[in-house]
Length: 185
Image 1 (cartoon, rainbow, N blue to C red):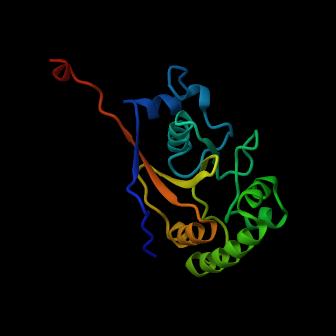
Image 2: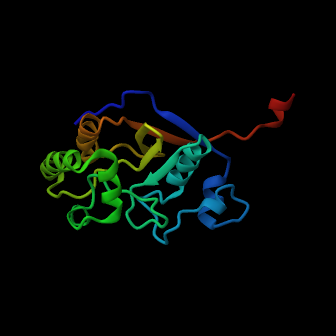
């Protein structure tokens, strides 16, 4: 699958050494007060990339939900991942049904589950990392740092865009260069 985002990647900077400070739980980290609220991190790079991008969009005035059904304060969502939780009408899935409509999500998940099984042999996964919205302005964001989009996500993103009429954007975090003494001169 060769899904390409409609727009260019959004590049989101973080401060020099910030990833290390965050991983250490250092209170001087600018993200210390908005840490990932669960004990377990996400993916091979943990939760740091998600926190950086989530805070970027929050500073722009958006509400941001993450693809994690167990987040507190109703800040998680399920779209095409977690088939058992979808069938059980988990609150994180019901929230998305209210936004996109139950018939739309039923159609989306029938198609997505079929494609995911073809790609990997199972129907799990495939959600973008974040759902970002403010009024009728809404889109999904796939967060990247040092990794690339999986085949499963490349299969589900075009379906999400078409059936939910919501763009999937890529946000890539990067470490901003520290100002050097030469920059001041």
